[in-house]
Amino acid sequence: MSPATKVAAMLVMAATAAGVVAGEIPKSLSSEHDRIVVSHRPQGATSAAFQLHYFCLQGLGELPRLILEISQTPYDSVMYFTTKEYKSFAPFGQMPVLHVKKDDGSEAWLAQSGAIVRYLSKKLGLSGATEEEESMVDMVFEGSKDIMGKKPAVHEAVDSDSTDAQRLRMYLEKSEGLLGSKQYFVGDKLTYADVGMFHALYTLQEVGDKYLDRAGYKSLSAFVTRMASLPSLSAYLSSERRVPLTEKELGKGSDKYIYTRELPEGMIREEGKKEL
Image 1 (cartoon, rainbow, N blue to C red):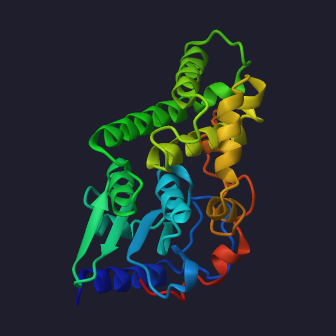
Image 2 (image 1 turned 90 degrees about the vertical axis):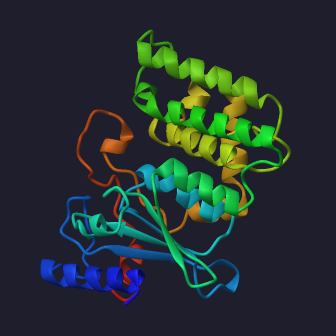
């Protein structure tokens, strides 16, 4: 039995043992519920080389999803609630984990969100055209993580003098300078620097009542609007494949992973019918 087959069998047994009820819509990440498999098969694809394992959250799984979606790459998003079966195959016992199925029949299991983002971007042509561009792309990507880390500051006044608010404004001012009047942060085509920045900036807009507009970052706001209008990204953002934010992810001080809106029905509909 292959490792992938063993994992699939283990998942089925765990769900049966837990006695979860198929079809019920979970209200939070702590719900007793089987894992969910959401598949994306663009352009008539019938199979997928990539399976992304993560909790049923945006969190650290959302950026890899955005990269797969924006590149129109077939994939399965395997999302977990309270079950811990992923610990048996996750390299460090935590998620996200990317399961790669290769053409020669071999497979790989990759952990750590940054490593997954870089691997996918390299495979999908989103890493930059030269060595210098690759380094610049990685630099901007790291900067986007710093912005995301100061997300709670969007709930303060735009001129707040708190340390986090000042740091966030500095990050945004520097990012705006890097972007300038260009379409992309690095080079003349889309890279994972743009996807990472979009993810961070879109989140600020989403949880902070259009924070970029309120704080006067016009070019960054225009960048977010431009990226969100790309057909593949626009389709994903409005699809039933996207997990809603939780109260904790809003950055307002809650420690509860309660969904801010109901999980899409289509996300639940095919659960338990898909084999990994």
